[in-house]
Length: 322
Image 1 (cartoon, rainbow, N blue to C red):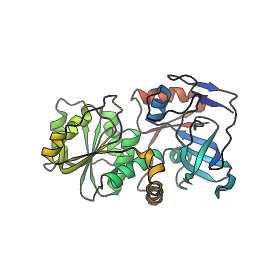
Image 2: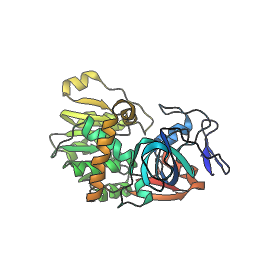
Image 3: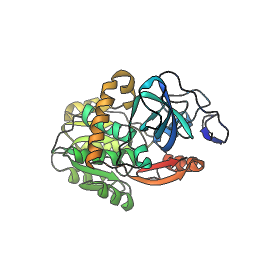
Image 4: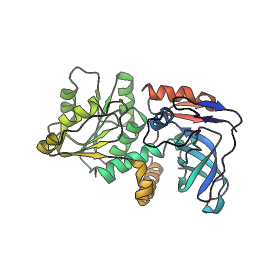
């Protein structure tokens, strides 16, 4: 089979004759129908992610696949499923492995590319907004990187929850995308007075919940506009700048900084992942959420897509189809 492999950290190569992976008793062999690229994939290749699979490994943490060998899992050969790939046998390949416990039926209303982009970003958004931040109807949600993969999902989930959504993007093209996704107000982070623009957009009460996959200047600005009893959800650091939270500022303004490592829920509280999957499937069936796929590439161009994602040049989701 063809598979991208990381043999040395910092780069990957396409192996045209890679061995087909062999599942253990808790895993399922899948034929990859589509693989959605995620920022953690770029970090994995660079050796900068909190998890480090043994070398060599195939990246690609999220997929829509077809069950080939269900083993003793209760699934059936031919089932179309979504979920996370089990590294080191990731989804940037023609075949991948997955933990049977965290495979779910692909939403029937979504094609393979959208289904591939449905698991990680929406799971992260659901757990971040509901389990961690307890977003309530009528609250103001501020979403950074609103036109990106994680941000676009958060916009749709915020609107589905009945929130007023303020999106932050860079430039008019991304601003237009955020509006199409449902953001009520969009702020361009390139403005001369970002904090002033955010205060105007969020209103006198400020942002009740901030969803921040960016860090750096985005986090600093968020602390200036977060509401009384507001919650800043730290999702990641796409800017490359990891900020330091000032405990005295959080005390004086009475807000919370909440960390979100969604992957830990699979081992610590798997019931949360299952509950989120059920809720998301229902929202998808209603048409309330719909993954925004901006670009589809063949497997041999996966490196190109991943590099663009790492540089912050993409919008929505980039999906690879073997």
